[in-house]
Length: 169
Image (tube, rainbow, N blue to C red; front, side, top):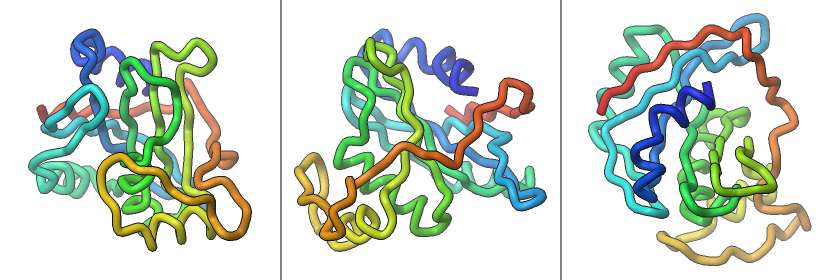
């Protein structure tokens, strides 16, 4: 799915423009499975991506009987990390579903081409919850001594999992 996302984001990536998408799926036998990549209409720059017409995302998900499990986006020329804007975006996913994931695709990062992240809980979640700032800014470390975000240890990658793509752009 990540390879397909990068194929669909190729034009934007070549033009140094971020691309974002929603990861949707289902819960079966106590396991969440991402089975859909939904690319919404969006406005983007070299370091931001904002979805538009979000009702189209929910309508498509509803017709498929799926719900949001996270999101994916590119960092066309940056390293693989979660920016402050990414942290605030991911908070809205993780507060609704603690298992929600954020995937950052970073084709120019020679150390790591992708990362699958989440806010640390409770430290990172509380830090972002209490932060009134928007845009790019620094955050103090969580009071519990944890990092503000972490690599997901609960994600298993599978090349056998079938998935759908809905490009709503």
